Length: 156
Image 1 (cartoon, rainbow, N blue to C red):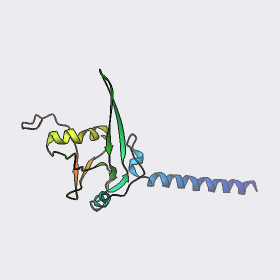
Image 2: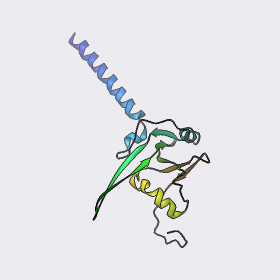
Image 3: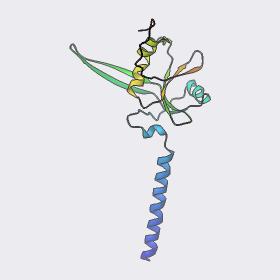
Image 4: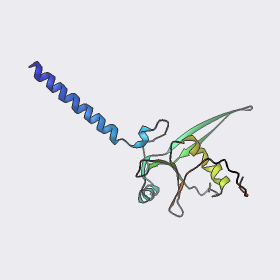
């Protein structure tokens, strides 16, 4: 009787370990990246369908990143928003920003730097940023690279 009980406990332990291992292996890649904000509540939006057509899977919803700055005059607060987090077929993660009519992006080096670079600097483990132009129903993929070269031009 004791032997049968031990066999049943062993079978149960193997089933639980197998289930946990399967759950861990099937979890989204973002859940395995420390520091990456993932909001599991994903609000429906036409941009999700657009991302899926482009081959991305939305794995996280809107995230608010609270910022605090100490100045000589005192503390000031602000925040950044990530609209979604998406992954591609290779499991690479992308931050997603939706276009806003009142805050258009100037697609120059300085415009991209000022509006989108802070997000890329906060989460360098991401493969890049996907900018959804809602007026044109287009997805722009943006990556950033460091360069030591001097560029001559009219951008800041």
